[in-house]
Length: 264
Length: 257
Ligand code: SF4
Ligand code: SF4
Ligand code: FES
Ligand code: FES
Image (cartoon, rainbow over all chains, first blue to last red; front, side, top):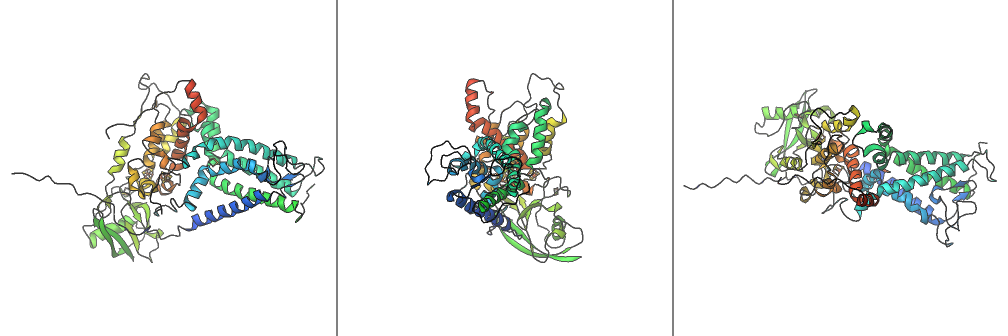
């Protein structure tokens, strides 16, 4: 007598039609994040392209610093790159902070969720048919984040210098401080906090090690960076908004709409 | 005592539907208690997997109002009881029956990872390490294998076809754990990218959001792993250096799994 072997049943996922069964307001967070990103991008694009009111002794907008081209406003930056008058000097340098933030692990999460909808929220089906993540071009480029970290660190030094020279008055004498100085100073501190809390920084200064007890200094650095890193998301937002506000403040002073408050 | 409305997915091998029940709820109860009451009073054939009722065995993973949770750790008082509460099986894995899934995908992925590989010349008991050397791995060892992270990850949840190429957060975290172990000598970085699909992860952190052990999977395992892979595979300076110096061989994934 022959026996028919018993086939195990082919198992399938549960048939559930709905995109999600979540009942909470999962659209809220991606909407807020998307809105802030959008407002910032629109404002920054405009501020970069207008090519005016970005400098007023002794303040320079972070969107235009370091100002390296010959057509920079007089007194701003180190003008040595030959340039044409109609093109904004910002174009030459803005790629650095932009690239740093675009490849940042936190912003990636924010825009993958709120703009690319991949996924919009956890447990909510994404609208895309295919998904390859960061395995191929163009998103594989995100792996260069560490290089942006180093160049951005250089920029932080320059922007810190911008804040220091804001302690000179418009004639170049030290011992001045205005609201603009404070704004630039806070901007520099936030940018350092953002860079130091970066995951690439955390990896470079200690995370890559296997044997912490053999490298006590790097272990200590890693521990401090790790503490900052836990706040990377918050710092990312605050520093982003502050960069925008710094530009806005200098723009308002430069255009004569408001006058800088002088502390001493 | 009050009454709550439940909508429980009932079915076999994929085919099924949400069935409505009205059931008694007492103060201090969790969803698993209510499912047990359903079994006891209305539908003795309701299949549900559980073991410890203490959030430590990882058996009772399911989706409650669309959110991946442990049924034994989800208090009824945290849910809005004026609306029906939807209880469904994990979406990413095939259903055996009702709320019970076949999670063998996870066991296959687990076996592919080369296990702990100490230096053979170091004798047992000779290796010395300090607390700070193991603290990172200890966070990952809290894992209770509930696979809620694997279930919520959109890479496979929304794209069944990616299961072949992607091992999921739980097992990429296992790779990170071994890579951070001071006594381990294998190099799984290339395999992490090419065989376990680390590149598919877009660090959107849903795994971290659902982990009942509050392991920071993305920040402490996946991103550090991405950085290690960047060093191994995508860093032109490191590549130049490796052309000059010697680099230890990559450990391939375990074959025949
Ligand atoms: S962070 Fe990566 S592994 Fe975790 S759920 Fe998101 S895509 Fe999946
Ligand atoms: S990492 Fe967390 S969510 Fe994933 S299986 Fe382990 S305990 Fe569950
Ligand atoms: S700047 Fe955000 S992770 Fe590097
Ligand atoms: S029954 Fe063990 S985790 Fe819920």
